[in-house]
Image (cartoon, rainbow, N blue to C red; front, side, top):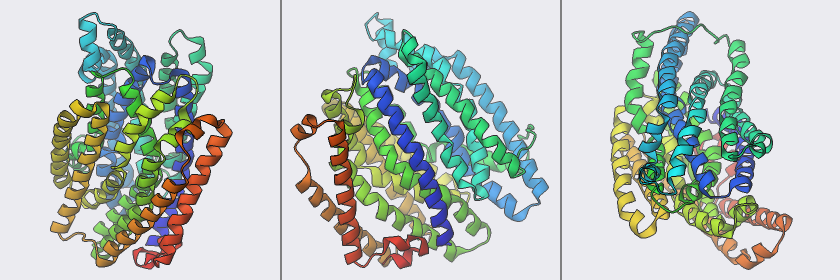
Length: 523
């Protein structure tokens, strides 16, 4: 069980690593081109709304509902019935997403007013920030169709994942990064408003990602003719599971969108600082948390379908320990190395030291919630694999409402940083409720070995933190060095921290290289 999961997780992590590296390159190019000013705020806003809906319609709620049902069909039904389900899902989803996309393009000013209330208010009152509202409305017309392409890309990826073809969907985001980088280099420089060129890059990235998936679907004999199937039993089951999952699995994305809305009332740069911080947060979250969640959902679904309770618990335990092993050092490393990473990656062109300092505050706040974000990715599949979407949706609503309260309380004294703190606090609350629910249902409970394993990772992480604090150069030195020296020093610190962490873990009796052998082999 764990050998296969580890191999699949390693493949997804490797492909995601490539995508994240290119994502960092993309953000470096954007930071150099626009910094954290008005243009950057508008571009990140216009990109965030279709990405938010992508999480709801595609990678988030839809995948959590579709994968368990498709797995059940593949295990218990004939290939012809499975292909019929795929065709019905594709046709039904296609009609719905096409309608949403058309509405989004036509009503882009309404959406901009709804989610960028500060800019809309400035526009109504003829204030300078009103220009952001007009530009954002235009750019949203260009970026919103990305939702249509990425929804079918996610559908194809979910099909391939249930058949063990994890590498394809994990590698696909690379093409979005390449498209935006290409647009920044060859389209934006020739335009009066460079941010519009980046929006065109987002659109082209969606097209290329979908085209990339098609040959692999054909090879799996899963390229079928779409047809309307609202009342098809499988589609009924999926949409029944999906409706509550829209809230449950996408709470963190709703919270980030609320952050954007409130940040639109704050000083110029707030949206950009939150964006750059979130991008660095997404790096370890994608490589470790999402990679583990991607492979664990189909595995848990199969164990539930085959009534393998012990195998289900063992798979959950493997996922939780893997999160502890990888998430603890990643969280502390992200917090301690926030400024050095921002200096090395983004401080050039229009992105200056002021932007580094402002973004680092948000990164520390987001980073404190990394372990919670990662744990949600593992605990939530414990419900969705059993086709239980109602329980996590209750927890999701509580977490979302709590985030609104935290935003109001913390935004006044801490500004945009308070929004990041509130997001991390709501993630901790959500993760805690998800675990409590699994424990109460008798589905999963952390064993003594898992608790002891957490203690060992905590000790090793503290040793790593002490080493990094002792070896960390002063900020002035970072500014005096050229880019090569900064990069080398950052790599040295990351390598030293990882080495100390692994050494202490080994001394504590943990064998990280045996993660693939199962939770019990870790020590």
